[in-house]
Structure formats: structure tokens, C-alpha cells
Amino acid sequence: MGVPEKKAKQTLPNLALCQMVADIKAIALQHVGDIPAALGKQLFEIASKMKSPASETLQLVVEMVAKGEISSTEQTTAATKLLNAGAVVDRASVVTDCGVGVTVSEATITSVIERVWAENQADIDAKGHGMNGAVITQVRADAGLTWASGKLVSEMITAKFNAALGVVDKVPLPLPHDSSCSHALLLV
Image (tube, rainbow, N blue to C red):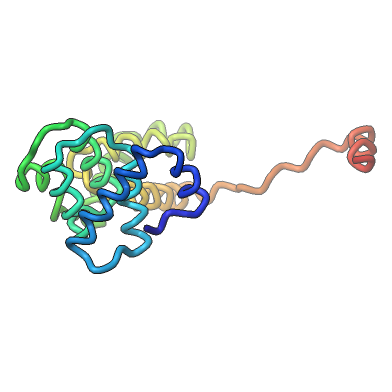
């Protein structure tokens, strides 16, 4: 199912998880002819985080994942939460609760970034790249970006910081020159 061999070996002693993975795989195979590695990883992720989902809800969610209707990390997280609630839900609820069919454009993300940037301009001027995390948090909290790719949002904010403030130098600082330390390293 696209799970690394090491992860598969770690899973073998957990019979409940093995059974859940087998059940999910069987459901998925009803809707797709083959399970590509990316889909397998997504299904394994869901299986490993589930407690005891309602059978009907599990069937529906796995079908939607297999068909690509639930595909992003954000949607998968929402689906897992829905499954862990243990309630039976209908397709309309899954669509709403998991953002099925919702796409967030780069223009929408840019608009929110610009608004948050303007609100925090004084702090950004004072703290520079140190505000990156706070800006990411505020942008991700915007209701319009619930289903936006977290990775894309982060990349766009980092690009904004780099364009406005320059690239952060990630070159490691040299070690202080201490002859006793150098001598000790030569002995190792």
C-alpha cells in the first residue's frame, strides 16, 4: 500500500491496526483497480489514527479518499476526526466537514497574506523574520483558508518575507577556535 517496509514491520505486532489496514484496503479496492503508493500512505495514515469508526462512515470516507475526493492533508485530518467521532454521517456531511470539492486559489491565499502582513507591519519591521511563525499562524487561522494547503501557505509566506526582508542566511556559524578543542577532535 505504499507504506515503507520499516513502517510495515513496525505495524505487524499491532493486530488491530493490521486488521484496520486490511479492511480499509478491501474497501478502497472496491472503488479503484489498484492502490498507488500515495493513496496507500493516505489510507494507512487514516487507519493508524482511527479509534472505532462507524462502519458506514468508514465505507463512505474510504470511498471518497480512493476516488480522490478527499486528498489533501487538511481534508484527511478532517476525515480522521470525523471517523473518530464514531457517528454515522451521510455523504453531505462528509462533503461539508472535509472540504470536498473546495479549492483555495493562490489569489485568495495572497489576499489573506497581504491583509495579515499589513496588520502586522510594525512588528515585522521590528522583528523581521522572527515574525514568520506568527504570520503563518494568523494566516492559517483565517476561515477562508481552512482547506488551503498548509505547505503552499507556508511557502508563500516565506517567499513574502524573503522578498521584503531578504533571504535568511542559513550558513552555520564557524566554531570558535580553541586549540584544546581542535586537539581533542584530532584524537577522536
